[in-house]
Image 1 (cartoon, one colour):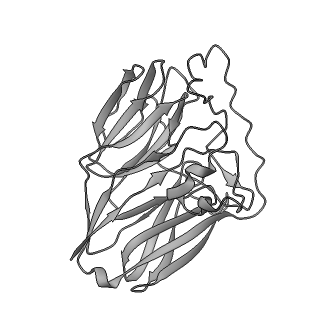
Image 2: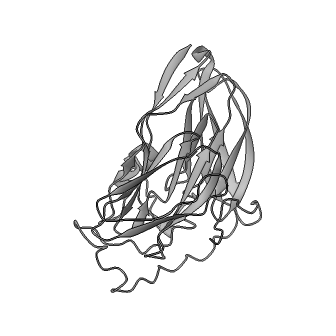
Length: 283
């Protein structure tokens, strides 16, 4: 038995058309994707260390892959319309409010960002960290746009802006939150049940994010190029799941061999998706 540490970082970069130019070498992995952020974007948010205990680490391999758009790309979504009065207090510390629509981010080469990949592997136990997973309200956007955490972990909603924000969650299986969070403060919530839900700020209605609470043993979020990677996966045949706020959900299969990396090329598009669960409900 071996304890393996996994450290993830989520970039706050967001584009309607994602900049996935290979000249930026560090954009190859999500853990280094902060350098892909557009000029003036907020810095990346580092997630806490997650411990995974494998019954037999000698059989472990890994899987990496890319989610790419199939068929003709849809027209880019227009930028969000945010008035000057609405955004008072949003621009600070050299950063301005990002007006890009983040609901469907497709790179110049077709990679699709913000797809959540989850995998359930036998013989693996995830240790819940003491420190919370952080989602920040910064420059009047939620950062990151999509956050994943295991069942039983704590999510901390930070407010790094000088203005008041609101945390309004549309969860079905965890307690619903509808709470004001003043500038420079935070609110924590322990999430005990697996689901995906939307979180919004009622004060700034363009602000929204998606929280995925998973009971899987492995998870990842695709980067600006549509890439993902799962480490320390026991050898075997797998059927993993994917989820996207607009494209819906699906499954894909692969085989992991001990000491080797499996590769996956997965196409997505309007014709390959099922309606996403975990959307907004009126409260």
